[in-house]
Length: 251
Image (tube, rainbow, N blue to C red; front, side, top):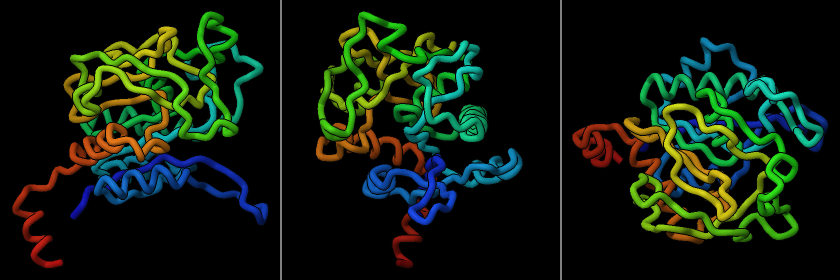
């Protein structure tokens, strides 16, 4: 059986005006193409139910979305903070902590990187342009296209991320107005934009604890970005080879 990977979700309103929970299809396609079964993790559940879900998952993908509430990282608030969902913060922070404790493989993308950092004690720039004036533009809109390669990132050559991508640097898209300000203790920085903004980190001595600030799910035409999802899925695949062989023979 292929590994089961949970994808965090966000709230929206359907065309019929009904409250909904969803995730961008690009995440689902990237995980499925890499060989895993994607499962959407609903919001609004009590912690006991979240733990029951987490216990059955082989991995968790923390997806992009709105901003983490500034109170979660002891900030004062900023007028450009938007699309805050405090329940999503609660759910994802709990899942991050569960994944670290259980040794469950996890991958964070954009907001996912930010919420992992906050969950482990780090802080964020609430708005890069305002709080880091020397920074380059990072918040490219849909006008350029979500696969627009906005800038390059330099990778730590000794990092797991560099080994997975097979690169020392790579062009990436850029769709964020927030970023890591202070990295949580225990996390290792692995990628930086030319202006010094952190673009990736990993959790050492964990089966797979990695996050990137860009959106590789929109860059699946690039071998390196497909490799990232394949490496994540491989880390989530805990089945003994004998069970895999048995499953293949029955299909």
